[in-house]
Amino acid sequence: MFDSGMKKNDIFEKFEKLAERYHGVATLGTQPFGMVFDEILSPTRARVGSREVILAGTNNYLGLTFSEACTTAAKAAIDHQGTATTGSRLANGTFREHLELETALKAYFNAASAIVFTTGYQANLAAISALVGRGDHLLIDADSHACIYDGCRLSDAETIRFRHNSPEDLAKRLSRLPDDGARLIVVEGLYSMLGDVAPLAEFVDVASEHGAFLYVDEAHSVGCYGERGRGVAQAQGVLDKVDFLSGTFSKSFASLGGFCVSRHESFEYTRLVSRPYLFTASGSPANIAAARAALATIAGSDELGRRLWDRANQLHSGLRAAGFEPASAPGPIIALPRADETTAVREWNALLEAGVYVNLAVPPATPQAKSLLRLSVSAAHSESEIDQILEVFNALSDLVS
Amino acid sequence: MCNVQDSHVFENVSKILKAHAHADILITPDVRISADLEIDSVEIFDIVMEIEDIYDISFPVEVASSIDTVRDLVETIGQLTNV
Image (cartoon, rainbow over all chains, first blue to last red; front, side, top):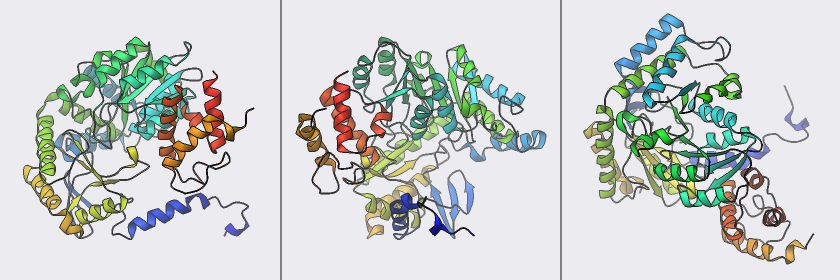
């Protein structure tokens, strides 16, 4: 075999500090960054080893992963179209169902164009990198998700960050730009770490005053906010003013894939130039079918949304009553900032041992270097499951000590 | 080119970096912000925003990402304020 001692420079040397931190975290209990679920029992329950846990960190906001509509559609798609498309959208990877899903998305958002991508990450990577290029200007919220940063890097456009959720700071930075080049502002509807919502109506005004296009990533908010789950832009009355709206099928839509819709018909041309769209296989038949079934469910009724908000309000107020201070107003994401990483890891382990799975989020993946216990609520959570989660949080300090 | 260490910009930048540094070392132009001061990439972006407000400039992300030493930072501020 190869002798690593013969190499001029050790390619893995740069991982040493990271590896130390990774293994250090595991000494406090279960390894949180590589969690394995041995059996998924329902949208809100799983087995980890011999322990059954309530899932409160899955982004399965509407709890549709086991719905009759989604599972039946996915199974039928496998039976009729097979397990994969084995090709990219531009070659042999566009089936009629991909186009039908795009048509359904256009109708749902009242958009002129809709493109379906293989993952949510790729949706932002593909759309942003195709829309702007060298000589153009990207203005992104400082707390943007990694896929937005990566889309910017792939675009070759100059990228300027503005302060999180600050239309004033955005306006200041726009006014410093030269007149040449297109301007694209990128924000998110609901931020995944702290669960805070963007003031989209104000961003629309700033974009309009400065001749910029507005791109909103609603990965976490579609399905949860607005009438029939159309998202934060719709809830704030500005859906028709947003130039581009992207999202994912891997959260409320209980599948895998992503999309971007636009009020501009010319957005269709990005299919011809976008590398993350062109050079990867298209979404599998089962994923496309499940997403389509979920979209029909979401567009057909506000019932799941109402259930989600009931549970979110119950959990948020219960956590406050237990002495915790959520980072944001009630919503499907409830983040609890902890004193430091060690405290957060210890509490995360204690919760897991008591039968509650939440997300552990630590720097540099979090804003303002915060260590967080991050909970996501599902419409599939019962009132009693939320009560059980709260019972564990009420006892958390005892469980840790 | 002016002497970086004698400039007002260096003085201001040093104060800001000192407040964020995790390693207690003397800040000189050749000190590396990440490797020597142990300031992670996300914190560097926050520091850049603080500097942007002081000097009324905007650092493109790709420029901010390529800053290694205190000298790089001071010289970049000089270039952006002279535009």
